[in-house]
Image (cartoon, rainbow, N blue to C red):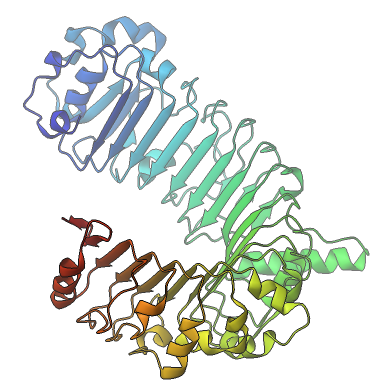
Length: 496
């Protein structure tokens, strides 16, 4: 398919592919006229994906009466500039398409009489990323509030993703999408309201990027929602605080989110909202809190089912209350949150904490001092350890492990994978790496100051060594140790 897409001089009339099911074209100069000719012969195309095709500037949707004409070669004889840039989807494709992706098509817009996707009766997945002119047509011209018109999207949709929302889209109320299971809205600073009352089948929701929401309602109807990723903002936080205050005055139980949630990824969380936000999520297994500079404490007493906890870029977060009740915790990731490091020194002394640490399998941190803390002696099930700066100052300051940290590392006898990522000043690998007798995988990414492997060698249990964006000297040493038992990958290339 890539050869076809890259060679516009190939006559499309010679590409008669009546059984074609999928077309995927990206970063290509293919014209709308050429692609129109090719797909016009397909009787049952199910998947059409276009990405960064700047020569396609117009999209027109075929009508039933045009079906016969669009299947003939006469339909493909075009002369005007718009015809050369126009992709005309014949009616039979409109009926057969199940997946339609259009990405990085900033100038693409509808033309002709039909300017929506309502006629795509079989469409279950629609992705519109970086095509604001196309999305703008879905906002009703007669709507003073900038709401997306009901009926411009097919009711068969199960997965809808829109990125780079147009400025005229202020309100999103997806009525009629009774089968919608996944919804993603990203990068829409003018989007102020999302109403989800009718999306009762929704299982996965994402609202992230520069979204200026002040109203987000309908969660009480989403009893099937399992995954939520959302970026809070001051307007939405303020609106929820007001709602909480009103509910408290009426002595009503507060439930901002549906109790069915199993995964929550949230940005810009505040103290006032977090306690009520998490209080009803007893089924939540995965929680990630990112870029919340105002958050000072986290209450997890009701989140007893949590297995994966990730905290990142929370500068003022100094405590996690109720962690001792998270007895199912298997993964802990903490980055760029310096206040939690001091808290971790004390938490191992809490009653019930030893049970938590003994079940932990994954630990990812940016501060190497954590592994020498008392609770790390209880990490008897730890199999995955990662040091990574993720752009933070703490990881960047790591030059080598101290003697105390080296000794602590040796106590992790169950460790199977060690990853060192984005530690630009790290110059030495752990000297006693060879004594980690359970270690099978060693990954070193973006650590440009490391020049060699440890003098005492690698553990005999090691089966996979991977480095990427590291020094040439380290690459040379890694090539030498490659054997049939030890697979070595350097910048995604296997060393034979």
